[in-house]
Amino acid sequence: MTAPDSHQVKTFLMQLQQQICEGLERLDGKAEFATDSWKRAEGGGGISKVLNGGEVFEQAGVNFSHVEGAAMPASATAHRPELAGRSFEAMGVSLVIHPRNPYIPTTHANVRFFIARKEGADPVWWFGGGFDLTPYYPFLEDVREWHQQAKAICEPFGEAVYPEYKKWCDEYFFLPHRNETRGVGGLFFDDLNQGGFEHCFAFMQAVGNGFLPAYAPIVERRKDTEYGEREREFQLYRRGRYVEFNLVYDRGTLFGLQTGGRTESILMSMPPLVRWQYAYEPEAGSAEAKLYSDFLHPRDWLTE
View 1 (tube, one colour):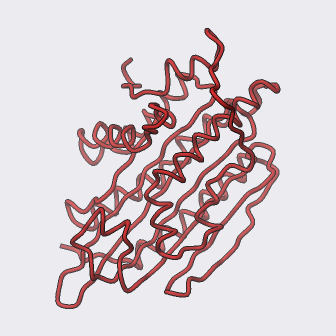
View 2: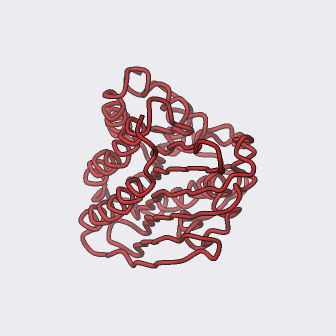
């Protein structure tokens, strides 16, 4: 069985970051990503690429990080207690895109690799990642196409993969205090190490490479849709749910902060503008109400 090769994974991740940024710049047609490299005192560092004030994307951040440490952080050992006392190496690409037009969904994706080592013992490693979609004014055809792309990515790896990782995504991106999903889901996987390094790495690559082909057609369809102040205000209100999830529940945010990662890069997922409104209720029968009634709960998008 092939031994885990962190250098090979790092090379892919850095290429993926560049590939996605170039694709988003083409979609936007105006703005370019600014690059910001950083180093971590305890070991490692990263490259943050952020686009601000674009024609299509109000803000987009695509972050590559590669950090090392002598001991796993508390968030990781709580999830995997057998890792206590091991050194670690963690790397990944994580992105969040906040479009300007409320008819284009916000989206998030990440792919990551962890390896924990201890002298005299085999390394413990796994892959994780996925992507999800957070619309404000959803179109069923967009949601179905998004999930069709997700299923197509998974199919070469087994028929059970898409249903399992789709369900995991629905469960992970759920806000218990709101009793609603963050959006319409996609894929989420973690602790992937069954089948050997090459098999798992191939799946992680498929997810990373499959993100932009899944998202770009939705952007192209919706970027010229006219909108007014009402739609913009609702978009800013719903962005608040994104903030709530990332700061309260997201394991990646917690891991980054606990490992002494660069705060600006960790929190680049926050939207540039957002608002909260006390006891908001959408008008009955409105497009805003339809988001809540038809889209913010798990569904089989490919058959229903």
